[in-house]
Image (cartoon, rainbow, N blue to C red; front, side, top):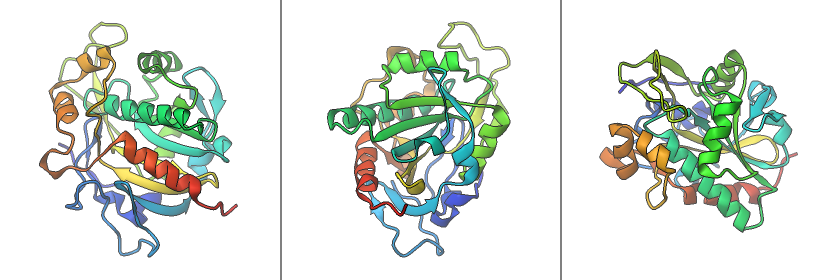
Length: 273
């Protein structure tokens, strides 16, 4: 596994200590599953909510203003979602290790928001780390596999801007070639010149005031849920192991319920304007 360090707006919670590996993050290195390690610079008010840490930092201007397009061809930016609670996570539709489980967990959380009547107040956003391949057409097909709800958006944009957006959030992405044969789940054909995109498995929540309010880093724990059949078949050996044993070897992990709890916490915060 490749281990890298990231810096940026999330450094106050020492996200840089979390590993980055193929199509997702490695284990949290804090030594406590489900928690990002506290930094000496972290605010005293920071506390655990579910398996993540709370925070209070303005969304970086680059992240807020980047022009995005969702799976239905609609244009938006994170800034345009101000006034709603935004759950944000990275996406790679060609991922065979962790992203299918991230998508399932966020889809489950989106369904919970619908059942509670809060769909209009909470939006779930999966932002690609592979804009060159994750076109609107591909995102639309991927969303259809899961039966995407109106408050679950898969978004892409111009590659350079997407890279800059993730960098502003403290998440480094890296395109790397792979020798492993890959068959495209969408077309069924072998992929020519396959590559992976290394990134952290991170989930962020932005409050209605546009401030970053919660973060967790770790593998998605989707046990007890059912991935779309095509995604189950698409997982490689590492992906099947992550699905069955997300917290193996002391790795951090998070569930849809953890996100639901964090959303409830963030929604109850008083806006600072």
